[in-house]
Length: 199
Image 1: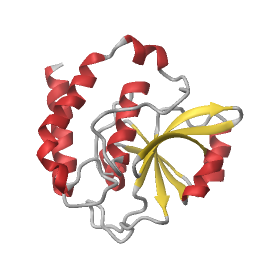
Image 2 (image 1 turned 90 degrees about the vertical axis):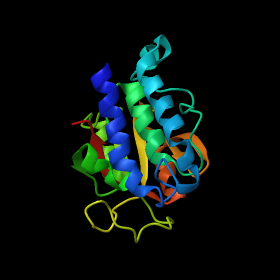
Image 3 (image 1 turned 60 degrees about the horizontal axis):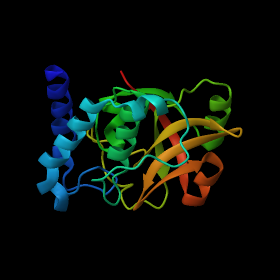
C-alpha cells in the first residue's frame, strides 16, 4: 500500500505540475493550485477505501454519473480517471486530457463516434476505458502536449458499457457531470479519437 500511495502521488506530481497554467480540461488550474495537497490526499483516501458500494457497482451501468466533491469546472481528466479507477478498478494514471495516452496505454485509434459504436457493439471495447474526445468548441486546440505535438483532443470520458443497444459514457462537461449516450455526443460537438487503458 505504501508503494502504491507513493506511485500514485508521483504520477500526480509528474503529470500535473507542469500544467497548472493550462486548460480547464485538466483536473487542476492555476487558481486552484493551493488545494493541490488537499486534493491529492482526497484521491489517495479514495484509493484506500475500496468500499462495498464500489464493488457492487463495478462494471454495472449506474442510473446517474458518479459524483465527486472537489472537481470544479472543466476537470474532465481528473473526473474520468477517478471513475475508471474507483468504479472499474483500472490502474490508470492521472494526467492532463491530452497527455493521458502517454501516461497510460493507447489501445485504439478511433475515426469517430460511429466507429466506436460498431466496436463497442461487437464487444471489442471493454467498459472502464478512458475515451479521448475531440471537442470542436474548445479554446485549447492550439495547445501542445508534453511532447510538443499539437493536441489531438482536450476532453476525456469513461466508457460505461451498453444500455438499450447504445454505448454509454460518464464525463464532466464544463460544470456538469453526466451520463450520456453516444448518440448525444454530437450535440455537444464531441467526437471520439482514442481509447486509453491501463498499461
